[in-house]
Length: 121
Image 1: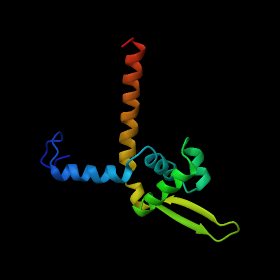
Image 2: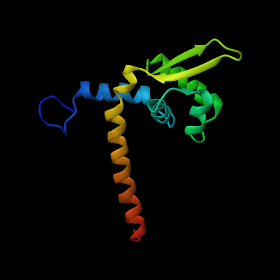
Image 3: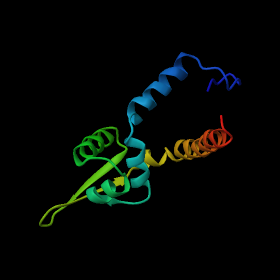
Image 4: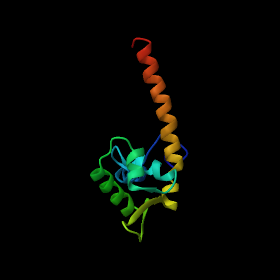
């Protein structure tokens, strides 16, 4: 976090950077959408199937916000009916370490909580 060598301290610049990241990635759906797209170019309905529980309206809203933040590229293919594909940008790919860290922590957390519950705590 802090560039002074102490990884446990955050200064105001660090907090601002974290706030910026959370503002872009906030909510229940954005990271799930990005992970689906990081696995390859997808059409709207393919994303909706991968992100269980999201409504079409919410998916549309989230995709627009992700596109505004240059994390999703939207491509319209001239056909009848028009085909719209969503893909990752180079900026999206910079999230790989974040996704990997969250995934690792999620497994550890699940094991800790489920393990504690199975021991009667």
